[in-house]
Image (tube, rainbow over all chains, first blue to last red; front, side, top):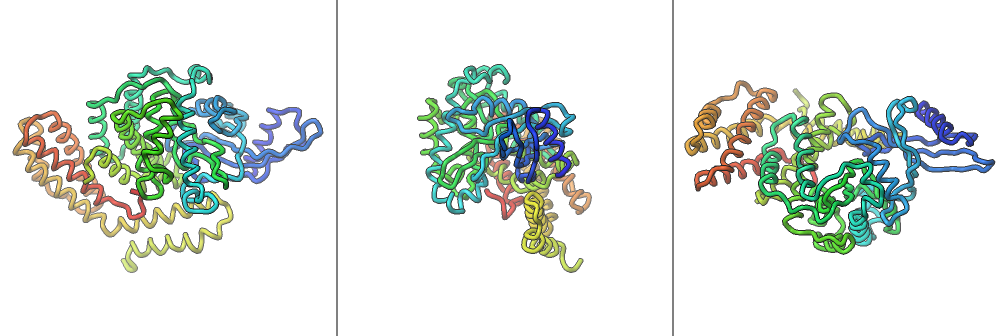
Length: 343
Length: 148
């Protein structure tokens, strides 16, 4: 860690040549950032004679991960939404030159005094007394995110375009390809879901939206008063059908309270109603059902991919092996439930 | 082997969770040790049932294929179903049972895909039997600490 801290301090000096007395303290890796290595650190320096102290987050590309994504896309999303009603940490630097830390990385503000773990949020005071409030904000923020005009945010220039009637096919192809490439055993349930989805495509998107694509309890920071302070983990962000985000947010696998409340927070109908009001979009039941099935298939693909990375030695991070084993069967059960075959 | 493998794994997991893990000062490493303990618990759970559930599933699939073959008109698929239904296990090592299971589940996908395109009551019966087997397959694989 000392080496990484020293190298990062040199990078800060490169970015801010006017800074002096640069020190990086308390650099430690955060658990669970399975798509990138995530570190928290305290940056101390002086600029123009004034001492500054900034808690930061460093996100560095791993050698293998649950999901392989472009860090520039994620960084651009943070930059686009910073200062809007969708709260995100302030992004500072995106660095793709490997000379600094061996792999590309980006740096953003650390939002302190908050919690993201679903287990802590749902079961531990002071967070657990604000579950309803957190839930209302969660789907209101998602609605605002999906309502935002990607062109005005400058995201149409940095993300691939997609037509409203092609959103579903783009995502289905993407995740089917992951399963094709990474499955280590046949997937009869996942394959049946794929065939059904091809035979029963959803209606076209009502409009093209920014889709966070991993919007769930666990990927936002809430403070002790029940305020959501930051939406995190934008690594799968893309342009597409906003129903994809709603479906993912209410997906069975994220029902952390082990009941039917999406995200362990609110009744499903209430979550959907809040999202509809905030987004100005309608959650068409046929479309929502299709995208919920896609959410389940996508999760299955992610667990399969993580297990493959772990088993083939690309990345031996325990979380990859754990999720592949812990969640893959649950995900197959969730697919059966969504298709009406669990009873 | 005594003590049994599953008991040994459970005890190592417990030791990691209650003795070793809490003494690790680095947060990332401590959480990794907890995940490792949970992996060991899942491995312990799998140890005792590993062969039984594979044998049970392979038998169930062969029975399903025997019934489906009689109703399948595609000659190539019918021949593959009949051949698979007559197969016996080459051995009872987990790796051998996995190889059989992979082959049988690949054939299940082919059969499922085929009957979805066929009209008639017989096709629907086979389809229902496949869904039932898929549901049971998730019960066989159930992990007690899994969320759903």
